[in-house]
Amino acid sequence: MSDIRVVRAMWPEDEAKLHAIRHQVFVKEQGVDERIEWDGQDAKCVHVLAYHHNELVGTGRLMPNGKIGRMAVLKASRGLGIGALLLKALVEVGHHAGFLSLYLHAQAQAAGFYAKLGFNVDGESYQEAGIEHVTMRLSLPPRDSAITPSAFASNRLTIIQCARREIYVFEPDFSLIVSELADMMSAMTTLLRNNPRSEIFVLSLNSTALIERCPEFFTWLQRLNSRVHYRVATEADASELGAMWLSTGFAVQGKHSKGLAMAPAASPALETQLQAYKRVWQRSETDKRFRRLMI
Image 1 (cartoon, rainbow, N blue to C red):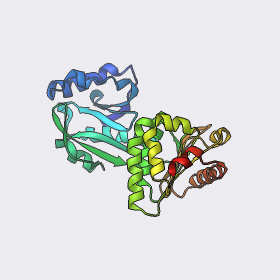
Image 2: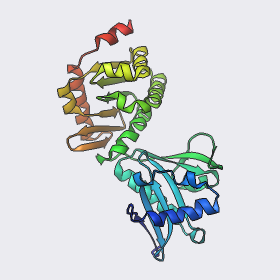
Image 3: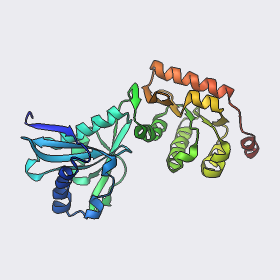
């Protein structure tokens, strides 16, 4: 495959090139509505381009939420392994950014292609742009290094889903992630149900904001108070700890002066972060309103 190369696109310099490929494959060949194809998300994504004999023949993108999409190879260049190279390049981008998992909406007829590259079907099939699709996911090994803010956001749910026993959370302002809380509560409830010995420790900076802006989450905390423990940290501790999501036996994330970071299980970084969390927990206080509401 020395005559095939895959490179990271430059945006917006390469915008017209990759749009031309996608217009040919999706709009002309598959009849996708242009209003669907051009969804306004391209400027936020990482794109890769595939060249065959120095001619552009394929493209794909990785969205900030870890979704791979817009995988397209011109008809004359299919069957050469170009699609696999595009996908591997996007997976490498995601792994380097620190994602714990990536996902895609695969056309049902192409699910076998993605399965050979490690993706697993997640859920039932559905219609998208008039074509049958299935959601497929790929788990990635954690990296003991810095990660991007978008990967940090995406990985919260993955960390919860992969937890074996305890989860340790410090989120200074839960109202900033209110759109994610329903899925998080569902995943944490599943952990508590499946493992009677599991516990969840939650630290925040401001109970008032949590009660007013995230009432469903606060009610959930109350209802499961025997195994979900809630305390309020100080501003000083917040600056030491930063936003942090830890789960035993899997991964850790912390936001520090040096940026966002993640460590795999059994690493010195994980133990350091866990001990820092426990020190802050011991200095933190329960909220009186929370205690009254539990009665």
